[in-house]
Image (cartoon, rainbow, N blue to C red; front, side, top):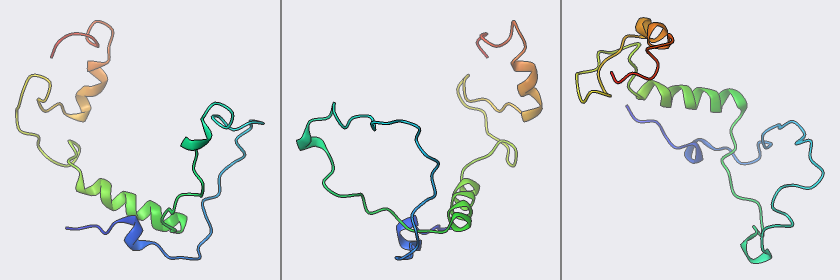
Length: 100
């Protein structure tokens, strides 16, 4: 299965993301970053609606391996299959920092 890039799904003319106010009076770096390292124009980012971008990232996530959906073959000691049900036990005091 192949998922197109968000740039390929982009539709010009859609508004940018709606972000909450940053809550700062002076954006970080405006006075610290030398002028020759600052952007001269905004980056050209893909334009997708919020539902479209959520679907895009959900499809990408489904392409990743998941121990909740598949068996993970044995590998090195840090790569062994650990069922999700055992994660709570592994976080108990005394277990959390032991070598597997």
